[in-house]
Image 1 (tube, one colour):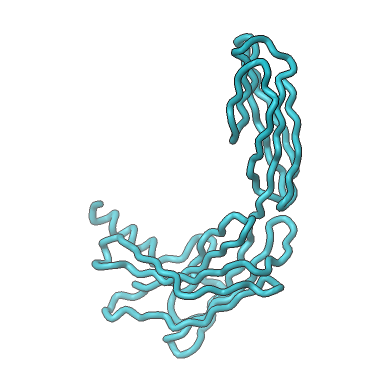
Image 2 (cartoon, rainbow, N blue to C red):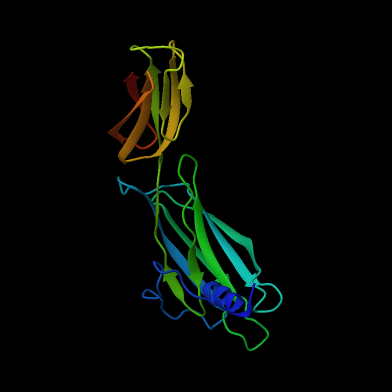
Length: 217
């Protein structure tokens, strides 16, 4: 990595995320302690997610500021309450040198049957900050495919995000994982007699539920 690449990498480490600005920062404690709190809700329903595992990580650039190697360590875990709320108060480390913001802190969320959250920067000095998270719930589509218009053994169907099936006697099912509480697009391609045809449909999938779908081709 060249010099300018290393500088850019270091600056990215030290900066806040684009969707995680400093607008809700207020001074806190005496310069050695920080606080971050927020709520975890479900996409689509906006319901709180109790029991979500909220993880606080501490990160620093190991070695030279320009080395570009960032080490992150989980330093605390909080289980969201019945309202999906969490809170951390922690002593943040201050670099011994004159370099500012060498240490950084971030939060991310894990919960069964939910896709992991994006990480959000939790600390940039002496302040308290509110970080809310929206988790995408799992949902499933159970696709049943059956070749009812068979031509020969070269017949096939390809399901986007799924499998390929060949032959005249296909009659099977598969389950696809989707983002819940939204419309999901299902795309498939069918081949008969050397002619391929594309199909698609939009299906509303409910959080933590399985929607059956039939494809006869």
